[in-house]
Image (tube, rainbow, N blue to C red):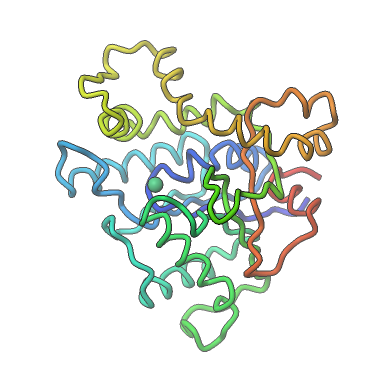
Length: 273
Ligand SMILES: [Zn+2]
């Protein structure tokens, strides 16, 4: 299989890790080049740190997470939370995608709950056509191969549920995914417990096993993803293995760019021949 380039663009420094970290681990193990971009610096993601302190800390956490699994780069853009799909930001996104020249770009869907996720989704989607327009961002050459675009798994039902065009089992890389997530201490062990109402939560008292168990709260949704894609998992991995897959990250192809036959898209995302 030729070396593929995969670009995951999340709104915040931890989104791609949670949504696509297992897939990224498997692609890297198969020799593919994987980059994550966070479209914002995540500076509102804390309750006691200042916005500047939060952004600085999250940048370090993202870098550590990238090192944990061998990303080519975990780039955190310097936009504060409250991102908007402006023309300037669209130009920045076009340049970033053209410069990396990915085979596939993965981001959120437009129907996401979080305004930063929606703005990121809009910015990424808005590049799908314009990436090949020579007079848009003339300073940045158009890559030879245009990427396909895809959405990571989500549980939103309105206007319709996510469609699992590709499904990647992540049971075999679950520990690696947790290694990556564990780097985002300010989020999984501070901000998210606080915002979920655990006011006296302290990760310092937790054993390593308890910390891993805690992180599984954010992995649980991928049991639902595997269940939704069960028939396809059995087709791809064989009926016996497919039935027993617990967690899967799934991906839907965007109709706003060129698309691949389902089997080819599956091979791209699962880094399989
Ligand atoms: Zn987010």
